[in-house]
Length: 241
Ligand code: NI
Ligand code: MN
Image (cartoon, rainbow, N blue to C red; front, side):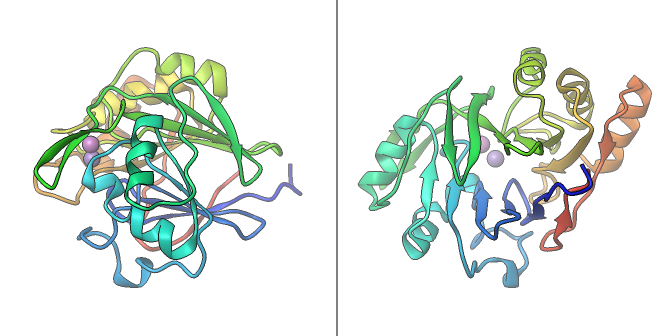
């Protein structure tokens, strides 16, 4: 285990997470950067970007996806229906998938999993169906893995995500109002059986009232052993073993 190379994660505020792989490739999940009040200006530009994962079609998760994909010729992975729309917007490289499936990209296994949320939006005043909302589990062949839940309510089948994919780290929304609150996120940690959790989707906008300290208290009250890793936007964190 000591020779295992592990990635570095940088929270970009809200649900946007950058992942720098040991081989130098860069992926980003839910790029919402230009309009994101929590994203440091110096973190909005990528010197390189290989892969973009989009959990669902809301602007606070994909506002920068088209521009970033075009600038870097990055591959975009999202629900099939959303990829059709992204293609129509001029994204050249898409690989649509759906819940329950796994595909390889950058040598990683990317599995799309359920999220209890919506995924529609208005474009030029017309409603667009963005497919179902989702989360992703990303697994490397040499052992490390993580789950990004996107926006979701708590659902008991998170236990199945734990049983099927064994993610060691989870990025979970805790803000409340549009997603789980910290109490529900603590239950999610118990269902998933993750070693560590990074709280996301909090602090960006006034309705998102959940805080990492609330999650820590809820985990302790429920005697769930998951460690809370609270990241500061723009500051890289080397994934602990
Ligand atoms: Ni959403
Ligand atoms: Mn959201």
